[in-house]
Image (cartoon, rainbow over all chains, first blue to last red; front, side, top):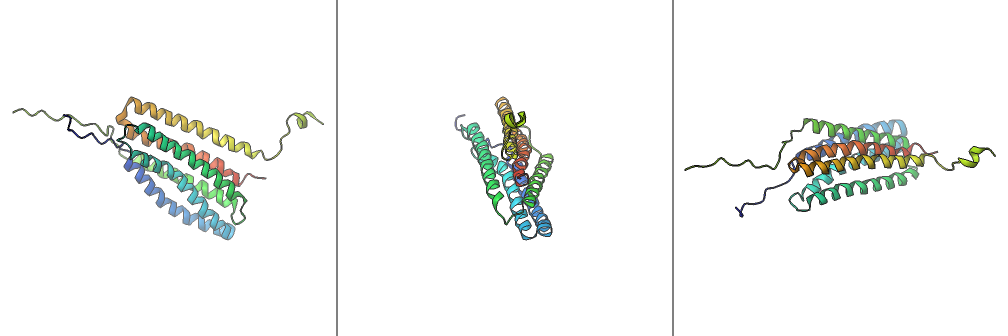
Length: 157
Length: 78
């Protein structure tokens, strides 16, 4: 009984999060093209640069949440998993917001950006990433109980 | 000098108040989402995978407002 290997306790959420990251990246590419063209048309080269930076910022910062959960799930078999999980996820979250605020403050002053295009492309990127998240979760099939092992049928002979 | 000038004068950009509001809301929201997830996982550890996905989508919606709120810095100055 003692030589049984401990069950793998990796949560079942990993494939869903990975799929969300992949589709988020794909949709981000589409948004990137559309917002760049719109930015170029409405605000010239500063608009183009702003659209690129805004979309990338939105998608990267929204994607960090699922990336941090995936990273934390690597420690699923550790005894300290709950602590590690919430440390990594919430720590990543707060670092992300500090970096975002610093980026916003830094980018506000520069003259080669168009603030309106930047803001609108951030909003577009955030909304697109939300749509992808909801669609991926709605289409996902998660088993209810992931790491339960059913008892084997008794062998009588 | 009227009472408004003496008692309630505000200098600078009122939009800075918005950053504070944009930080408080998501902080409370994410705190509730994560706290409830800890409760759920503590009660039923085998549901951790499902609860993680729900937590993640909850965080995503909460932080979306925060991103938009902080990004208004680009358009609300002056």
